[in-house]
Length: 312
Image (cartoon, rainbow, N blue to C red; front, side, top):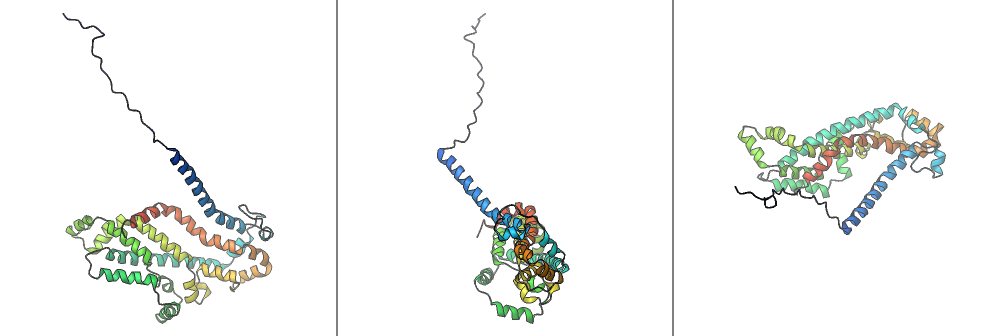
């Protein structure tokens, strides 16, 4: 019987676990991280400081504002101007008008932009280049203020939401971004849907749009912000105060051109306080709704812009 010495026995060697090496950060990369962090912090401060200052001014007493002592924290806290503005029934009427105009015009713009962009994304379409050229032409040349006014008036659109929605229904930049997004979608999906019996409208509604939530949400944000902040079209085409959007109301309030009774009380009994804080209150009231809506669409916003910029 042959015996094997323990020293001569083959030993089973287990593979040693590999050590995970961390990312080798060079000195230059660490310097880049520090500099990048400092720059981004400064950008955030520069971006937020004006708005925080406006909010503080809107809640401060006029004496501190005139003395230039209001920075980031309200001094002599007061909500008097807010109360005076919100006690005016015309303010709330115009605010409802703004919501209605924004929702209606945004829906119209999304429908028309989507349909136009989907058509332009089809390379086999005859006359596609001409349609793109017509859209791009309007980015650089317009009919002018007077011809537009005559056109809207002759069509009977004055004192209606159509005067705001229809002339600005398609933004060419948004159109081109959405066109690029549609072009990036796989054509095999539409071909398979056509084989299954779907027509063009069925493919758009049941295949393309469900895959386009990001770009559609981005376009909704773009159009909604534009229509919410718009005041010049309503200033031109609406003659009655009860039809104004809130932006025209606040514009006329600052200019001293409004005829509301409660606002008249502002200019008489609280003129100094109102003049000192009126612009700040105006900015806060017009930007607050958009700031509240933006967080809900922010995740679609970045993705939609990136996807829409894949192709030109």
